[in-house]
Image (cartoon, rainbow, N blue to C red; front, side, top):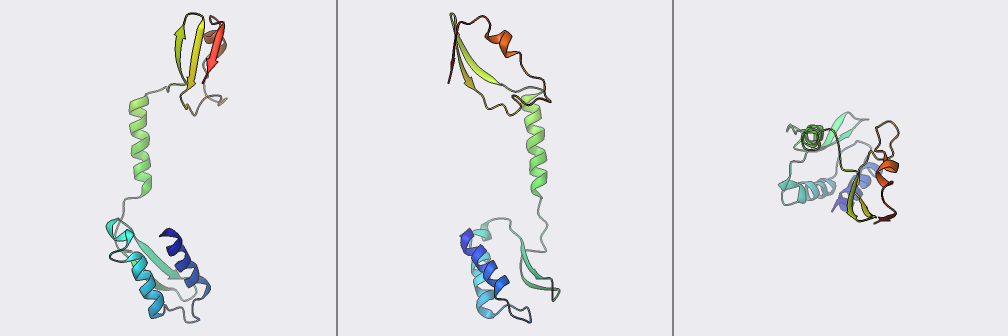
Length: 134
């Protein structure tokens, strides 16, 4: 569906008429791609096709509606993660068994990032003669 919409927009841009108006067929294609019954009709979506040369709106769908920006969602995600993680994340998952240490990575993005404090792995590994990474 997205490829179809992109194709329509590229078609409109490349083959637009000199007077910068949509033909009836072009308008119907856009209406089918973005209008009622399309994927976008069930979602909060706004769209405006604006011709800079003629300073005219060629097509719009819900352009007058106000939408909550994605940035608000990102801020909420950051706030939630800070509440849950506090000031640290799990760098390694491990199991001790005698002189053997089995280690799994935990996906900590700050590991080996020089500007952040790093765990002292040498001290952590010292008591074990066998270290297994998975």
